[in-house]
Amino acid sequence: MKGRLPWLLMALVLAVALAIGAQGHSGPRTEAQRVKHIASEIRCPTCRNQSAAESDAAAAKAVRDEITRRVRAGESDGEIVAFMVSRYGSDILLKPEGSGVATLVWALPVVAVVVALAGLAVAFRRWRARPGVSVSDEDRALVERELESSR
Amino acid sequence: MSDVDVDVAVSRSHRHTARWAAISLGVVLLLFIAVLATRKSAADKQAESPLLGKQAPSLTGTALDGSQVSLSSMHGKWVVVNFMASWCVPCQEEHPELVKFTQRHQGAGDAGVLGVIFDDTEPNVRHFFDREGGSWPVVSDPGGHTALDFGVRGPPESFLIDPNGFVVWKAIGQVNADGLEKLLSEGKARGG
Image (cartoon, rainbow over all chains, first blue to last red; front, side):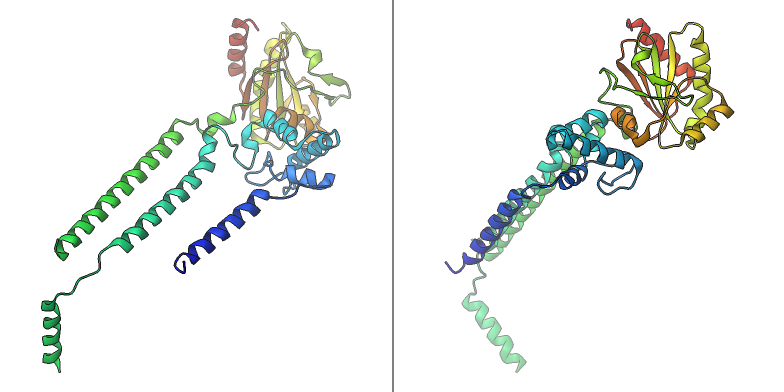
């Protein structure tokens, strides 16, 4: 039981971290928070890697204005993001979509972690299973002789 | 089994594992290379637009001469919607080509250009047209909403709209008169 305690602790930490991560935010409340949240997922059209929420460019302001207008019109976050994609294509999203080739971006790290964990488990098992070095009487006598001669 | 035999067996097992790990890594890398190699380049991708084949977004505005202009009022003819700015060098370079294109179609009246100012001021664009020529309507786009509707990222970008109001082509960067003529004849051949 004592040997398994660290593993149990690690599993507990992982479970708690996953639970917190999966829960995420409870969702923006105010209109401004919603606009900022949606704009943070949209790439500023005239910038390289800045979100429409962060950029001061005129195009980013146009995106924020459009989001605000659509939030006030009662559209959902998904509908607003879908509108942006319908104009600019999926490149306008800062986070890759979870479909098509872009799925690899999400799936590969998970696969890599699973493979790495499996590799570690196999390695640990092998190290533990490796037989210890057996010492024969002949070896002991040899060491004794060497020790005697060095005195 | 002696200790030496055990060591040899363990060493062989390690080599075996290493070989499989290397092969797996190699396969993953090859898959990555295959995915990247078969994807279109960034340059090709930029000419794509979700609007292609769809009805063009509504475009209305006040032209530089104060008149009201709309894309819908130009239905029945081919229209090049050109997003431009006077400060943009490729726009300056493509301008004579657009002048040539409009002059060629002035008589037939089958095609025209509708300019949209992108991130520039009306006085600057008016001065630019006074200097460089060009008689097509140019509308201002305060707030950049028209640019957003067309998914424009920066000037110059052009969209070819067919007589039924559908977006048939998009260009990022400067266009030329002969290229536009080619697209037009291809479109007409398809029955546009």
